[in-house]
Image (tube, rainbow, N blue to C red):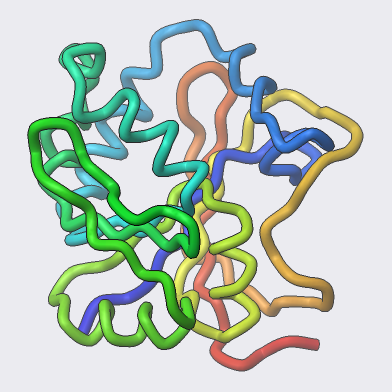
Length: 192
C-alpha cells in the first residue's frame, strides 16, 4: 500500500501562496537548482502517482507534458506517474499527448484511501492547497515534505487546517539557492 505525501514549496514564514493565492515568491529563485533536481529525481523513484487539485492541474498540464519541459531533469519521471485530478468542475483532464488524468469528483479522503490501497509506491500531492487541507483534515496524509525558500512574504495561505498537527522530523537537507527541505512523518490522528 502506498503512502500519501504532501510536498509543498513554502516561504520562510510558512506560507504556500500569497494572500491572493499566487506563489510568485518562488520567482526569486533564479539560479541553477542542480542539487534539488538530483534529490527530487531520486525521490521520485518512490512515487507511483500524483494527485492534483484543479488549479494545480491547469498549471502542471500547461507545462509538464509539453515541449517546454524538455530540459527539466524530472520531466520524464513526473510524466510517467499515474495522474489523478480532484475536481467537482472538470469533466476531462488531458495530459498533453500522454493521455487523460483520472478525475475524482467525490469524497477526497475516500478516493485517496482507494488510490493508496491500489499502489505499491507513494502518491504525492503537489501544491493543491485546498486538496492538501482536506486530506490533512481527514487524517490521510502520511508524510509532509516542505521546500522552504529564503523569502518571507508576511501573509498568505497555508494548507493545514486549523488546529495543531503533530509532526516528527525525519529529514532535513540544504539545497541550492538557500533552499531547505524538511521531511516530517505525520502522526496518525495526532491533532492537538
